[in-house]
Image 1 (spheres, rainbow, N blue to C red):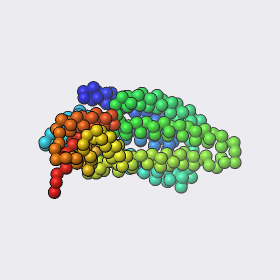
Image 2 (spheres, rainbow, N blue to C red):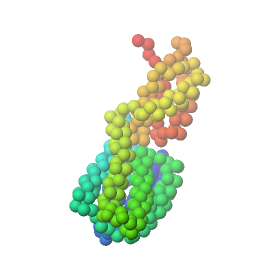
Image 3 (cartoon, rainbow, N blue to C red):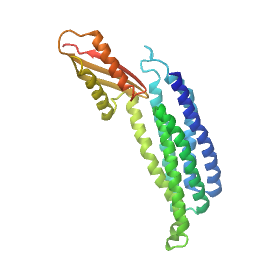
Length: 298
């Protein structure tokens, strides 16, 4: 467990260091070029950076065992953290959309397309390097927070590449009949980026709320648990009558209500089946608790 804690801290520290460097570079370039697109990237990285710091303090709590006082440990705090983080991103993105629309209505924004294109393509290459490092660690160990952070870096890669290509296209427009579009390229690119950015945070917010109020996981996860459980119980005289699954943050609780073919239940069989089911499910869940419960007769 301590190795996972150290690994997760290392991943987030790498992400935080990268975010600081990119935020500073984007802030300076946004000031120099007055580009709305670069400003959006800078605000996005700033919001992510603000949230990484507090979460580094939260991580050790997520590895504390459950107790009678805290039956779900601190796992719901992680769900709440993801909701807060994504909500901040949604608010910032929405505000920048309104700002970009305002710029368009005022006649657009003239920027140096060549400088921005070179900067964004360089930034995209740097983002790919950071993402590759983080994804390598994510293949070793993953969590909801790490996945949310990887999403941020994927969006950085896509946005930087998209902005770079857009301003290369603007440079080409300067010698064509489309030169009247040039002042609108920067705010339009910012709006397109914002719309693309909104999809995943909204999905994460919905998933975080479901986890926070202890709704059952999505159908894909339920089917996975059901298939694993049925596969292992085929070797024993028991069948699944009902699954009760709770997932919040990185923890999942699975209660399997079973029917026996006879009035007698073997404790040793239940123990063996339990260990087999839990062992396979741990390949898909970081922290999972499994209970096999004989169904009572009404």
